[in-house]
Length: 325
Length: 283
Image 1 (spheres, each protein chain N blue to C red):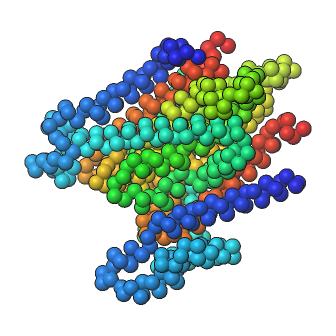
Image 2 (tube, one colour):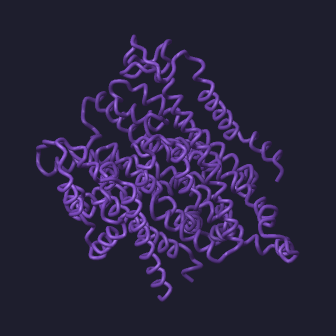
Image 3 (cartoon, rainbow over the protein chains, first blue to last red):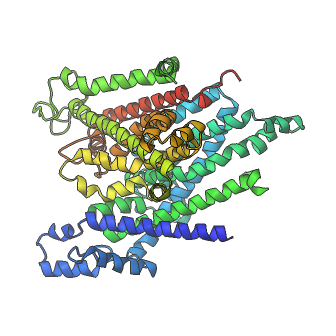
């Protein structure tokens, strides 16, 4: 218990450090003032200063003072304002659901399918099925997410043109002006969700299937699997209950390393498919020099990574017979 | 392991040999290819706006009459160089930091572990995108340096773990009690043992570096105009994919081929250098 508490304290400290680092880097390198200077007619200096100060973005205020104001707000649960005076919290609440849906569905589906394919490949090593999945995952691993997303978009355009129907939506979250009731609306939103999710899932499947295939091969011929078979378990049960379970333990730690890839893939996917989530917001906000938004996104990212890490730890405890005792 | 054994194993691995041949061909194309055509990337052909691939312009032209072949190869050269630069800097940094932290322990060790933890929490893309205004003015070596500065930590952690276990080996203990300086011990007794890991890591860092750079450049956070990379070429191609798709297809195809070739070589190197992970056909 004391260990758990200490670990939790360490994690909270890590999030605070990560968010602070992101804020300081952003405040030092981004220039929200440029938004006003690009306007025509150019607003008077005094007005610009007042606007920037109101959002705590004025570069004439010393950085430590701005940081202190920001940190005080964050501790009270307020991420501050965007450069044009809107509340970051409100926008965050709107956008976080869009991204979480994509990350959770894509990540979980990709992980499960990847594990299944990897185990299949290991069991059928060097047969046709294994060679096909290996070649497929190599191909997907070589295609960066931002290219894959555009490729899928092209594919959807082509498919829609060939069939003359709108099978997949490839821009935005729904068709504007859609009529036909709640059911049609849900279907329409799902059609727009397929391709972005597929972009994430394909990448994740490729990564996890490669990794699991290796760990599964290591345990496939281990003594405890042979023992399980010898005591009369069917091959399938022995493989799933004994081999796969042990092969999954190192994968659980690998999840933390893989999250960066998942999140970056989500940023690209959102931007390419025009989904108004956190990733798109990040890219637009950096272009606008919106320091508070960038810091808020970094903070959410850090929290998400730590939560996923804790989940992976819990999973490996559940899986590992040595830890469970 | 001697390097001849490594090369023989690498050549015997069909995928790795194929990857090596493909990679050499791609380098040849990037650096010798521009001399095969009379068009320079800056030239404007007033007789050809948005023309599809033809005998005169192998990859077609852009709406303002520039040769896509020359533009793509120019971006490709930049991406390849950045990938190599990122890999060499980050692997060297990982080797130095990992061995020193593992061997010395204490504050160096805590610093490295803390930095690696922090970087796992903040994705590389986010950090580089935040500091991207630094790259305005077209300083691409800075892009490579920043990327390398963010990619070394996980390898350093692995090197650190190996160093800690090597530190207790008899020959290292013997050298320490003989009064050999830590630097000499690290160079002569520890680095050779982590060398195979570092070689594989360097190969994988090339593709990681290229993917990271092109991704950043594609969204305007990496290499800045007037300079170009495969990422910026792909971004231009995506923007006008309907009117002239050839710009996207050639640049994206070359990028995928580069990453595929590097990954194949990296996987082959891992099999060749690490007998534990080599294909176990016998069993």
